[in-house]
Amino acid sequence: MNGTKKSTESTGATTDETKYDGFTPEERSAMKDRAQELKAASRRGTRGAKADPEAEVLAKIAEMPEADRVLAERIHAIVRAEAPDLAPKLWYGMPAYARAGKVVCFFQSAEKFKSRYATLGFSDQAHLDDGTMWPTAFALTKPTTADEARIAELIKKAAG
Image (cartoon, rainbow, N blue to C red):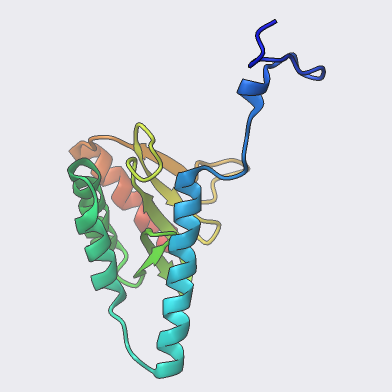
């Protein structure tokens, strides 16, 4: 038996396959981003300083690698056009759009989470209910005009 791989009794998997140290570095980074967002919001509240959440979102989008940036810019434009009442904000370091402070939809870059595609996600605040089962996240690679029309419909419906 190789000294680095030992079978586990319950699953038959090797310890190399079952090593899990809690959160991935990308998840830890997102949690740190969220903690900073909450800290900044708390400081603004006590000092009365006004931040421009849309400027923060646009700055975060501008920092993204080109492929993610192009997608995030399109999502931002669609949300602002179809649901202007949703307020842009950062959420776990990613662009998000909220109603009454609660996130309705969000963009997640592929690069940040080392994924092969970016994601457009919806929270339970989105009005997307359709029977007893419906999707809450969509993979994005290179949306077509038809895809963008579908995204616009989803955003409009999610915003209520």
